[in-house]
Image (cartoon, rainbow, N blue to C red; front, top):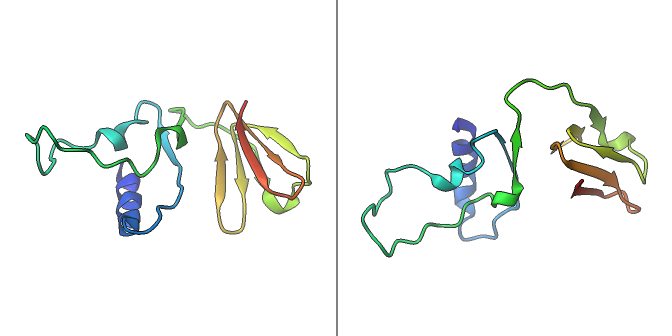
Length: 119
């Protein structure tokens, strides 16, 4: 949860701006921890308190298994158009890494864009 706290705090500055679309990788069983939060809420007994929406929507939270797993790593610049692979996998780019969880696949579209979809 330490890394999610750092990431959440970094995004808090975006409150008045359009929030970036981000995903989150968590260990199995912790998918909703960011939404549940802590018990030290500022208005614990306020029945009209509305929780703020989570920074990462539930559908963009991917759960990982609890053990190490060998997965293929694809270099983005080496993938031809039409290439397709099933998760779990990693796609490495010069400025980011995309995690393709188990049950998902990715393909390189006609305009060289990456398309992620559930298998």
